[in-house]
Image (spheres, rainbow, N blue to C red):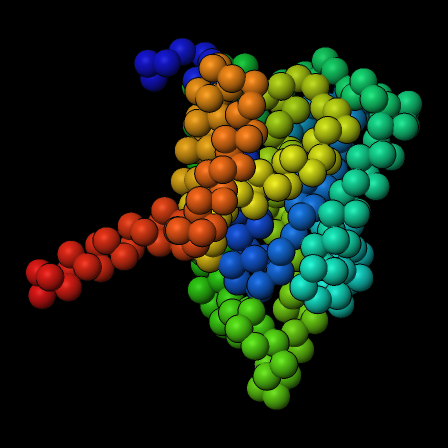
Length: 298
């Protein structure tokens, strides 16, 4: 409200990073799967939506459905292969897939090559008959993204609070025992992987409208690792933590970057400090503090 256009758009960027971080938390916090390639789905969604806006349609809802189908199909195929691997091998497969997509985008002139795609138009979103949301207005854009991310967060919480989430936590804690309870870990992990991909794709769906361009760097390792850092800072397994962490890290990176070019070095130190001294993140710290206070009051 007070910071102007720059901080409004920076807030939108923080929310989009939060979507990728939330997808990391679904896999790592609930299924015990560390993905280093969630940027793949962010990039796929960004490129698919950009190409559709430039050459096919200006319908936001049609673009959104197409992105969901494209990301869901790719995630199902890659997930069916990746989740058969365990531990570091799963992480390496997801990382490798993201890097392959980056090279394909970099070397394919039909989708812009190393220059990417520019001049992506910003559509209006028909919400109700006679009601249009104009994303060219920054505050409208911000509240649309915030509202959508809140719905995604609540929907994810609802899904993971069911028996599906309980089985995922069982797989995380002891995958070898789950089959003896009558559940096939493969299908549960695969569904979690597809769900996480769709959440990350939300960020890619919106990003081209925020920046007006896309490039091969959207598939990059930096985005995937930043999402992991954000999840750890906020608190893995909390779902809310990645959203809080994304806001803190995005604004902290902007502030530090205005003073030094070595902001990634400082963020790396923050990551190490959290891993060593605060592994349950900020939300975990808050829960412990409120729990202690409640215990004293009792």
